[in-house]
Length: 529
Image 1 (tube, one colour):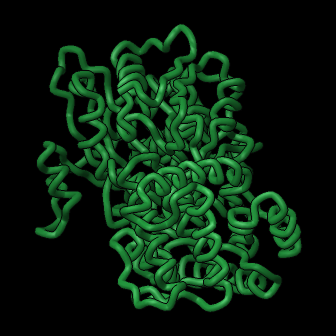
Image 2 (cartoon, rainbow, N blue to C red):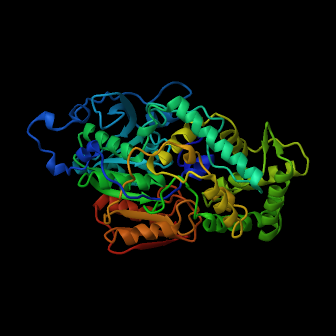
Image 3 (spheres, rainbow, N blue to C red):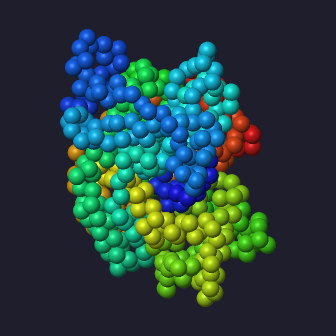
């Protein structure tokens, strides 16, 4: 993405689409995974050879400046916050720890209140495929005084960002597209998905089997050991909540305080990222339409929510007739709903204004006018229609396809697309469309059976259009010893430190400070804060 958190969760463009989704499945551990599932207390073997990962666990980290050059904005922010960076060496294949290695890039802002230090707090901002190395400064600010007691550690997961890179050289940053209005449009989607899968197989086939959440969790445990920590605390957003569930399952006893924000329930995680989110996105779209109608003088999209929604429908119909020329791009009816969906992950004036300007630009193009896209629309179109962010889409797809097998037959997707049109003809053909995983090699490992109880603090907004509130409720029922913080009345994806709700932020910080979960679930009104 071109912007960083806390703006990142709002402006991850198509990453914001895929930033979302859901939770896990059944799995058995490989031999290497078995070494990773031994509780910490059992790792007291008298001989170094008892630990096949000893050279990774005991490696010396070379801490250095995070600044790569004068144009490195992430490095500047990290440097200003007092962070340092290091590379952690991990095995490509944990079944062959003496084989090929890769590196995982981390950043760290050290605790200043060393007398009351809790330990390391590892971060994951979502994706899969999202960078987290640059996140410690804003997370440290959100933590307020309690942040002084933690080493706040950002991690670019394997093959992401500054870690050993993976790029399939795609002409897009995302596999997510609409299926169009008819069979011909769907068939084009099938051809695109197959081409994207072929590009990855051709250019990255040797490493694709190891681009998985389970291997990312194994890397996290190497990072833990290399930092000299017996246990780690963890803050994960969106997909990062699933990663946290997998880590806690694979490495019992190695977690301290765990916050999962924008919760992915483990029965929903699959390559078909957006299935089931259509009602939440429709609700968010109606909320945005009401916002835009109240500002018709500024955006001219309609004086009532119904008229604003009619404008969106008119844009979609026009793009289905003739693609809309916007800047150097052409926007068809397979892309319009993806653009709109991208504008709906954050419930605030800035994000809503970005979407309003984008719809205004598309309406003007539909009217035959020459359009220079607004900044957010221009960035999103570049993301979706050029190879500038190919690496993001490549890694995201590789993780999803490597974690869980997808249906192989295009007819399965076509039937689901057609069925979904009845309830939501706008978002349904996006949420149910085919993905490159239909043409991917089968996963190397079975998916993780997430443990059935764990004490964590879960955070979710009732109107979250990416990781739905129902998903958070599902994990809360699965984990009765956990607690759920609900932000009521917001169509918001990611809450803590992002939305600016004092009730939710204070609840998380109290937990991070004390290590004690609330005695009961907590509900925060949108207006609090």
